Length: 192
Image 1 (cartoon, rainbow, N blue to C red):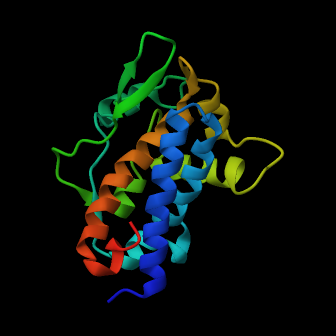
Image 2: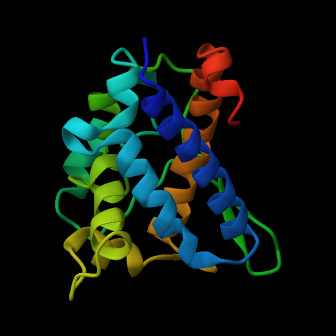
Image 3: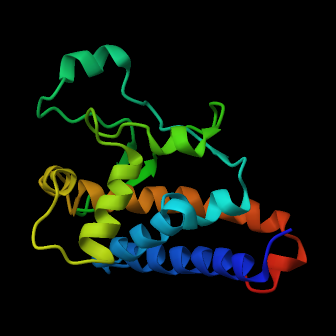
């Protein structure tokens, strides 16, 4: 059984994600920061992490085109970036990540999901979420960490690499939350 506060927090996170992702796509580019804080709260905030607290067995779709082991050896610590995501370019100077996760593959436990490498060796989904949430959103550190130095230096036409991928993670998580909130029956439906 879930506490009413957990259900309220879950529904609020879903609503905050949905509103901020919509506004991001409408031109409010800085709202990826709000999305990152919600992702941290839902996925990787230590003992307070909401999704595994409510759904300890939660599994998620793996990254699409994950970095193959043979390429990890080639890339090593180089400045090479690998992206398995499907990116749409609108012909007007805009871009959007359409597919980042492969829902056709078996889903994986949250800890494994967060440990998947993005872009280069050693940079994981969790490191990306926490870097944006901790260094740009919930806090204003004096300098960027290595994750943000790298991802901010790479642009997908109109936005940095990390903005687009935080939003794509949020969009995928919206689907997951819709399914999970539906399992709550009346407990979560009134607030959606």
